[in-house]
Amino acid sequence: MNFVESEERLALRKAVSDLGKRYGHDYYVKVAREGGHTTELWQEAGKLGYLGVNVPEEYGGGGGGIGDLAAVCEELSAAGCPLLMMVVSPAICATIIARFGTDGQKQQWLPKFADGTVTMAFGITEPDAGSNSHKITTTARRDGGDWVLSGQKVFISGVDGADAVLIVGRTEDAKTGKLKPALFIVPTDAPGFTYQKIDMDMVSPDRQFTLFFDDVRLPAEALVGSEDAALAQLFAGLNPERIMAASFATGIGRLALGKGVDYAKTRSVWGAPIGAHQGLSHPLADAHINIELARLMTQKAAALYDSGNDMAAGEAANMAKYAAGEAAAKAADQALQVHGGNGMASEYGLGALVLAARVGRIAPVSREMILNFVAQHSLGLPKSY
Ligand SMILES: Cc1cc2nc3c(=O)[nH]c(=O)nc-3n(C[C@H](O)[C@H](O)[C@H](O)COP(=O)(O)OP(=O)(O)OC[C@H]3O[C@@H](n4cnc5c(N)ncnc54)[C@H](O)[C@@H]3O)c2cc1C
Image (cartoon, rainbow, N blue to C red; front, side, top):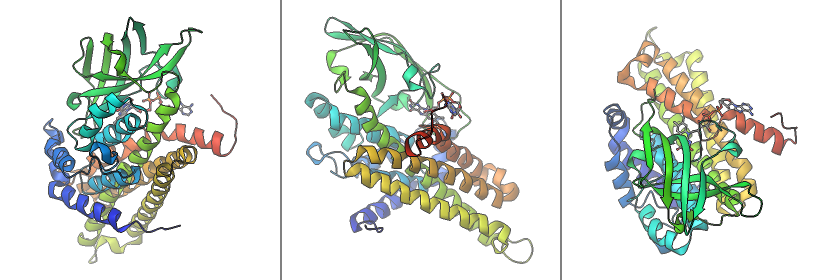
């Protein structure tokens, strides 16, 4: 057991952190408020190989694991640039295609995931199904050699800048007529596919959309992997998603905590820095401990996933995501509190961080659904729903 990351991983963190700091939180917030995208940062990170550290070497990637990609995501977040599409495009989509895609899909997509020249969004959430993804109704039916896709998705991130969306839909079982999950790559310019921006209070360049599929015709090769093993394939992508969401959150937690600590060291209203008062220093210390605990669990989940232990990784990834979401939300809240009135002023960026951190309690899977998972699967308690 080794609690110290390898020299390569630490060097990767340092290099990514330097890149993120060159752009910084002010850049990120400005771009988001102006309705833009962090394209230049994404492209630079892609060129340097950071977005493809987990893509197999034979396709031009770094040949590393999800632990490496999570380190990239965390360092960019901590440097002020939380890139939500990292959680989706290289983590879920590239992982699923690398593990289960056809040779053609791998040739087409993986080299571009490796250098960040494509992004792929991911759509599972539906308005009427919500957390209960067994209830999704977006369906693909066969029509000759093609598929015809109909349905709706909601809260899908980054569709406006994406080349395609990996859609979790359903197909009809030829024998039983029952609907079973299946994964499809849908180009964003496919006829019959439209999307609409959702107005969000978050300050983020990665926006959310409602998607509409109105008889979207897809070729046979749009299906990813096997029609009969979609659940296992899906989970192969959702564990990395949770590990990445945890890293995204711990990065935001570190960023917020850093702002809180800096302010507590410099602001003085009773003749000593306000950080001298334990009413402020203890919650900051508590936030630091919780972020470190969440990082440790995230690294455990990534190590389990990268060792091929999908089952154990599932539990650890859920716990890491939960711990990180809680740690980030509490750290951001405390950082805002330390700033007093300035915590509410746009200049300090704490309000935007509080909401960004808060996402970790809701997406990609809510804290309540993780508590349900742990209660049932880790503790063997009965299911209540
Ligand atoms: C910023 C952002 C980005 C997102 N990006 C994507 C994306 O790219 N792709 C995608 O597919 N989705 C995306 N989502 C959707 C996200 O995954 C869902 O919002 C999330 O899974 C919760 O689903 P819901 O919003 O339908 O809430 P609901 O399922 O309606 O739940 C509402 C509340 O009820 C609670 N609840 C529900 N069932 C239970 C239960 N059995 N026991 C206890 N409590 C329960 C939930 O925890 C939650 O607090 C995004 C969401 C956000 C906010």
